Image (cartoon, rainbow, N blue to C red; front, side):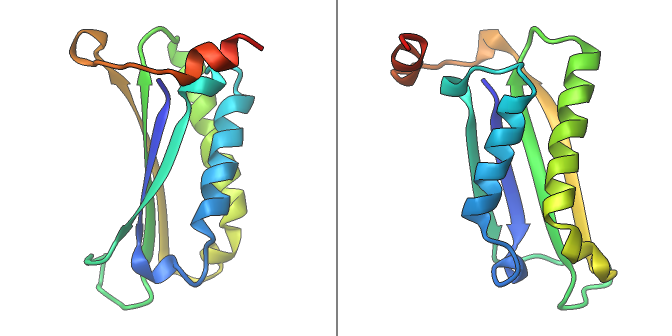
Length: 128
């Protein structure tokens, strides 16, 4: 169950194609080899209201929250996080040319006993 939620400041809209970024993150997740394609979800949420640091209007942020199921070792989780973060940081490198952008990623493990799922996509993709 790798679900990536990307929250970003609305002022990034003219600078970042979020559909393209979601596709890049999906590829980076799958390239780790730790997750099944049918389980990957990547979505982006625009924050209309925000106050960042010294509240300059050009300040922007992109925060990634990666929720995964248990079953991976610490090194696997760290390696996955580093690979995903590096891919996104590289893709957004132009935003770091000014001192007004913050990028973050956090990985959270989901408690299987408190998580319910029903997925019709898995059987289709596993059958290939």
